[in-house]
Image 1: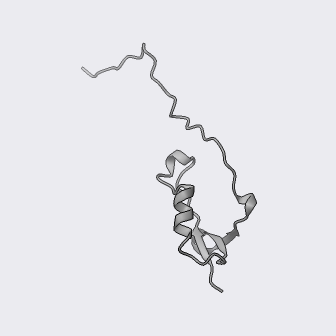
Image 2: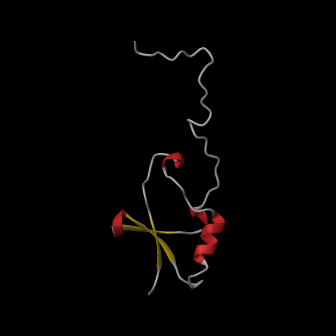
Image 3: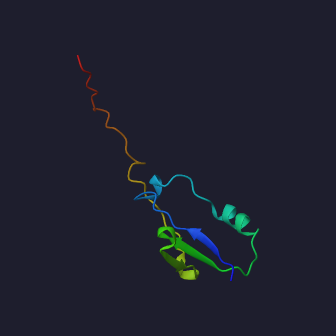
Length: 82
């Protein structure tokens, strides 16, 4: 039986540490090259464990980057070594 694997990766502790990722449109376009009946599984730990993907595998969430809203206070002073 042929299957399509999506390699599970651990790139960071938040989305902001993971680098570029596919958009939904890009993934749909990429997957269109495969047989529509081909099952898809997650491949984790270099093939040590696997996982299925179903409707409950997805959740759309808002991600709040903890560093995105930081602004230095106006009274912050830069110290220079003399």
